[in-house]
Image (cartoon, rainbow, N blue to C red; front, side, top):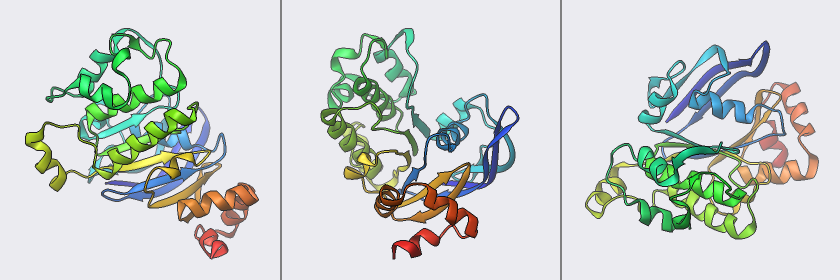
Length: 264
C-alpha cells in the first residue's frame, strides 16, 4: 500500500526527516511513536503533499505509483486521506458541503454518516467553527468516512478528546480500518467487502487509541530517524518505563531491531 525509500525532508534549511524507510501493507495498521519535535507530523504532511516541506532525497510510492512530487488533490483522488491534529476553521463552508466534496460525487447519505459520529447537529455550521476538541475529531472522521480512502493518516486522534468522545472515535477508527464500517449503499456492500482494504498510519503520544484498534506493527521516530520496530503495545510499555532516551541507544547501535530483543 505504501512504500517509503530513503526519504529526506527539510523545512527551510533544517533537515527534519533523515533516511526514512517504511512500508505499510494492504489492510495493515502501523503505529508511530515519538516525542514532540521528532518529525512525526512532518512525515504525515509529506505523505499528504502539504506545502512548506522539501523532499531532498528518496521517494514515496503509493500502490506502486510514485507520488513524491504529486499535488495534494492527486494523492487524495488516488486514495490517501488524513485526519489532522489541529485542522483549521473554514468560514463560509458548511460541514455538510465539506462532506459532499469529500465524497467526490459518489452516492452518499450525509445525514446517516453524521449520525454515526454524533455530528447531525453540526452539518449546517461552518467547518470546525466553535467546535470542541472532540467535535473537531468527529468532524474529521465524518469527512474521511465520505472520502473512503485506501490509506488513512491519523495525527494523534486522541489529542484534546475526553473519554466519552474517545470511545466513539476509537470505535469508528477501528471499524474504518477493519473494513466493517458501512458507509456505502447496500447494493455495493458485497463488492466493498470482497475488494476494499484500508491501511492506516497512526501517530500517538498517549497510546489510548491502542485500546480500540487492532495495530499490526509499530516503530519510534526519534530526531528524524526511525528505530525500534516491535509490537506497538510493547513499545508503549517500554517507553512508559524507560522513556524515549532508550531510543538513543538503539540508534547509536545502528540496529533498529534492538528493542525487540530487549523486550524479549
